[in-house]
Length: 200
View 1 (tube, rainbow, N blue to C red):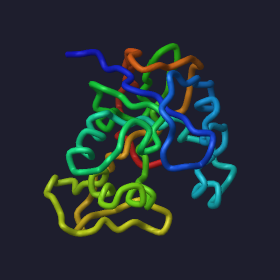
View 2: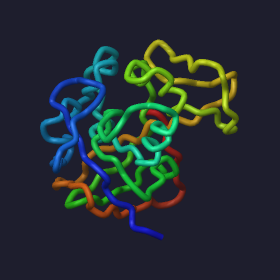
View 3: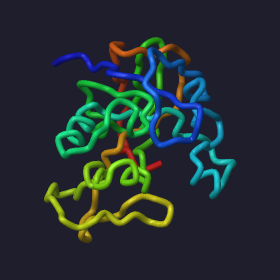
View 4: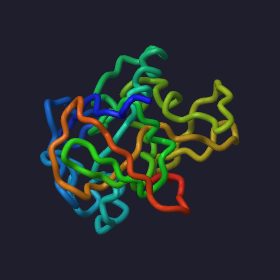
């Protein structure tokens, strides 16, 4: 089996949906990506700040598997690295199958997975129909129905059937370091029993 690796890295100082690909990002322990709008010890995502600005920031780093971008392009969406707002695009790793608490060692840094990214309206604003790529029925059956989002984002079902969120995973930084495209990713699973990732 091939070693998982970093395909690209991105950041943005402003609260925009997409982030700008760059040569390297610096991860800072307990803070996030230096120079990124979502860095901080307390929650930085605007919808969560409105609800409670004193929540801990469990979404310091956003990771997406590269296969999702390939699938979105195959469905006719013009997207590339950073388009979905991720900080780290990965190759050779099924991020969604990892349990909560998994540590990823990438470059000189380490992050701990806290949960799934909850989809929001901005995904479809970026490219109409993209939400249907990142949210699927749990049974895998394709649907013609539009995906309905709740008042604060997120989806419970499609056609009344439970869903799989595929818009990436969120993490906190446990060890500072620089991450570059091409860096290998080492996966450290948490001890048993393991908890599946849930939206954060």
